[in-house]
Amino acid sequence: MENMVFNDTTSAWPGYKCLKNLFIFGDSYSAIGFAANLPPPTKVDRKSVPFQGLTYADEDGTNWVGYLLTQHDPHPDLLVHDYAVGGARVPALGRGGAVETQVNTNFLEGYAMAATPEGLPWDAVYSLFVTWVGINDCAYSQTHTETLQLLFSLEEKLYAAGARLFLFIDVPPIGRAPACINSSSERDTTYTNWNTELRQFVTKFAAAHPDARVLSFSAFDSFNRLLDDPKKHGFDTKDVRTAWGPVWRDQLHPTSRVHEIFARDLVTFLESVDAPAA
Image (tube, rainbow, N blue to C red; front, side, top):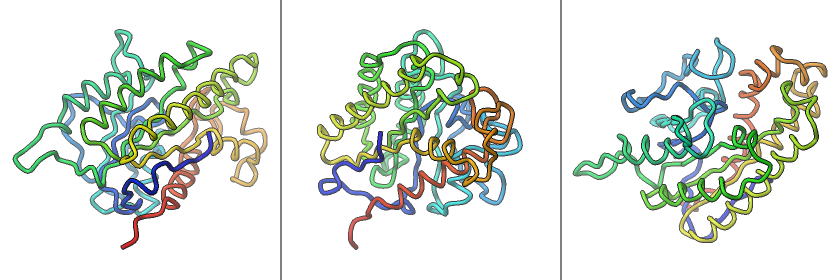
């Protein structure tokens, strides 16, 4: 799924550096240690290593969320509301942590929707809602229409709650992770199927809501650029297939260095989305 911008003439976009809230829904690639009993987030000390030891990247490092905060100069008041949980799929299926639970329970019934006399604690104009999920769903099915229908019913709930800025990220090429490199070609197919169907759903969602700025970013392409040319990114050729190395922290999760590169690619895209004329 290529990077795309929808509704650029019918919706507002404040510009990357004006975003004040980042709401994130997803799995281990975005997780920073969410728990339902934690208090609302506060501003992160950007001179530290944010979320150190709480991500699925290096224990002494951080993930793309932390690098976005520390290396890419977002708004000084930016708050990260990250509901992502390791192992998450879209449907709850009796398990905690699913995106269905992240939206229905943790967001819609949580602090973010606790209105005060002044209104909600976030302003839709400056709040970006990010969804990056699908890796775990792809482990259970080759086709994903039903799952994506559920996902976008959840996005409709976010829209109804006031969200107007959306970012969808597709799944990376998991077939190239150490856990999968010797698997059958069918394993690769499920990820490309997800990304193809996701693009279709994103396009329909954007068309249904012309007042919403809808963005899509391709992790599939970002990861492939690194894996296709590791030396350009500071890695050896053998690293792209090796678990517990410079590229892959384990059989499935990328290292902090890879998250750092991904964050750079993502922010480059967000900064390319034109802000409205002053």
